Image (cartoon, rainbow, N blue to C red):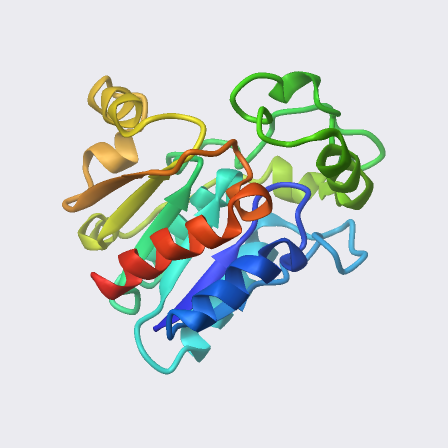
Amino acid sequence: MDILLVGGLWLDASVWDRVASALESHGHRPVPLALPGQGDGSESATLDDQLGAVLDAVDSAPGKPMVVGHSAACTLAWLAADRRPERLAKVALVGGFPSGDGQPYADFFEVRDGVMPFPGWDPFEGPDAADLDDAARRAFAAGAVPVPEGVAKGVVRLVDERRFGVPVVVVCPEFTPDQAREWIGAGDVPELARAERVEFVDLDSGHWPMVTRPTELAGVLAAAAGAG
């Protein structure tokens, strides 16, 4: 199966390299996506531009792919389910949940000069970054790509309720499946509360398992794709 890999904020496609290599050994075809504004030098990219790149990859897949979204890009993966519900085998959400219609995509940190730079590690102290050593933190910060304002402040638009029929697997790294179920049950994630088929998989890592646990993450994704 084609597995489309969509990284979260500040990440370019290379963050998936080790996951992709491991997925190939499981017999899948990984496709790390280069998103406009995240690695191509463009600071004018918009959320629609990034969604367009994801949809182009979906449309180019020979069969029904699984779209994997990490962190904020869980919303991009869910937008793909909204725009192409009949074309997706499954959506995998790693370390995050989809935003709802009318909400900003990722307006989390200060925007300066048209971009939202990586804010440093203070906001992520605790379970998010506990498994990143000093060298990994320095490498991450050095390679972090500022997110264009048009992406961070883009407004999510969901239009097709057939998205709720697309199977979802929630990969739980810095939180547990029980916590995810609790949040969904409490109404904090209304999109997944309406999804018809949601599975939860525990992964003992921080917020960036593609950096710290790439082989294990690949195994989880391969199992999800195989069960699709």
